[in-house]
Amino acid sequence: MCDNHRPCISRRTILSLGAAAAWAGAFAIPSFAQDAASATPPNAVSPDEALKRLLDGNARYAANAPAIKDFSAGRAARVAKQHPFAAILSCADSRVAPELAFDQGPGELFVVRVAGNFVDDDGLASLEYGVKFLGVPLIVVLGHTNCGAVEATIKVVKDNAKLPGHLPGLVRAIKPAVEAAKKAKAADLLDAAIAENVRYNVGRLNKAKPIVSAFVAEGKVKVVGARYDLATGKVSLL
Image (cartoon, rainbow, N blue to C red; front, side, top):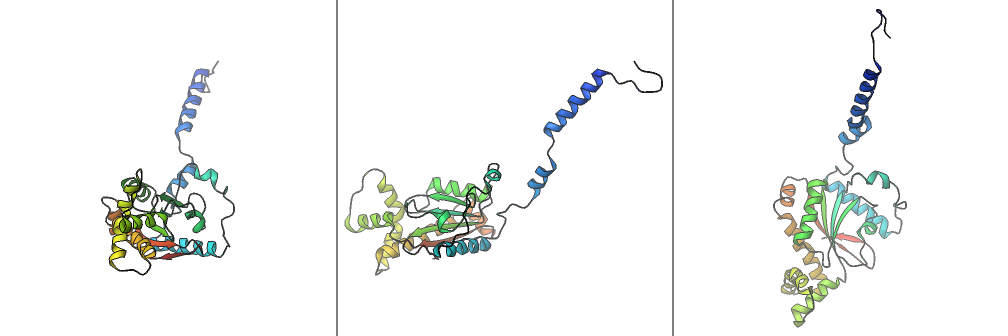
């Protein structure tokens, strides 16, 4: 019951106000979330900075002094979003592990793998996603010594060997690099073809329309080639 000196607030009004507050609270963005959304993402670095970070990590790996030891660190934070600072187009060879070779933890590298580290439509779509939606500033085409896919292609080119299943498609993708190395009369055809294969796919990515080539032209993304040495663990730029 209300008197004449105080406003009368019914029980129904109180419940209505409480429900409205709960509704607003449910859809309001917490201040910490707003801060996180407006913060600069950790991969907002220049292509050259990203490359230096990779090479520094490889130096640690080759020296058997990795900095990454706790792979659980940041696991909860990675649930909501990823911020890789480099994309790696790598061979599927089991002896090549980009995260280990560059001493990077989960969430740091966006890795696309296929035997022979060449660009096909599916791999290109993945790299476009990394560039356009994840903000990756660097793409590395990573070949490696003693690549079996390149060696198989050499056998097809030189000896007209026949391969089963879908392997001829893989050979067709790598064949231009083998032909280029053969034309140059390289002393070590396998090593030269591996390098040519990396360079060939760097060139393809630099021209890949409509996404990657546009980011490259604007200086937002750099595409580089490199080779991983299975024996030493060292990565050298090509």
